[in-house]
Length: 315
Image 1 (cartoon, rainbow, N blue to C red):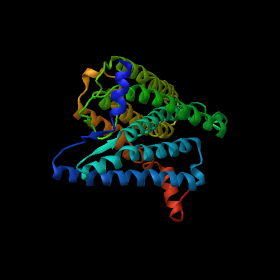
Image 2 (image 1 turned 90 degrees about the horizontal axis):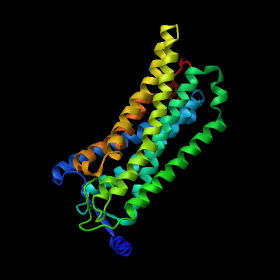
Image 3 (image 1 turned 135 degrees about the vertical axis):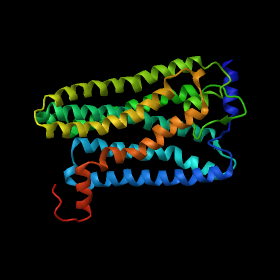
Image 4 (image 1 turned 90 degrees about the vertical axis):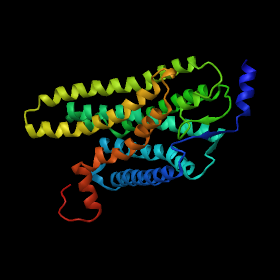
């Protein structure tokens, strides 16, 4: 059986990505919509990274992690959207087996990194609000670099496990993936072998990589809110709540769809729903992150005006 699986695997040279509608007019409308969304996402996140790099007032731990999140988001959408756009104008819509493996692995590395980054950013807010006098010491440069190194290590290991156990299965034709990129649940539906082990593995990995960071986020914010309620100044409470509200919005928007996708039984597979979920945590969240997280932030607005040379902007 093992040799049979390896023969089938080696015979797969490419997959077909079915993507969205097969009607040419709808495809072209979607092409321009997603192209605009993609370019706006790159512009928004790229601008945020530039501001954080150039403005000395944004050289803080919070903006350090925000800059990394923006870089991850730009890479995240670039892993999937350009291929999706090409397939909307190219009738064949094929992706080679090697390219599919690479896309799956890179997408997972970036997705897991985003999960862990949200937990790190929640911890950063917890330290900033609950231990303000020790904030600079507890979140110094060396500690931040260690946190980011652990984040990428977890991401690479998790993505490697997902990819290896998915792509080693035997696959049967027709090799048509009912999705706009090579995502684990969609690819598993083509396997001509029992995938119950993969379902259990995906749930276990989902628990470790999604629920554990989410639990850390919830624990951090429970402590944060308790600390905020002890602040006597209404203005101080409002400022602290405002800082945390953006993070909670982003976390909800990302974790909800991701858990629905990766922590459900394989029998619950619904290709049309899964495409919408993937769009939400891959494309829409990356588009909204700079808006929700930073551009309503006075520090970022001030940095933008200072870069433009507007006078009278307080640091």
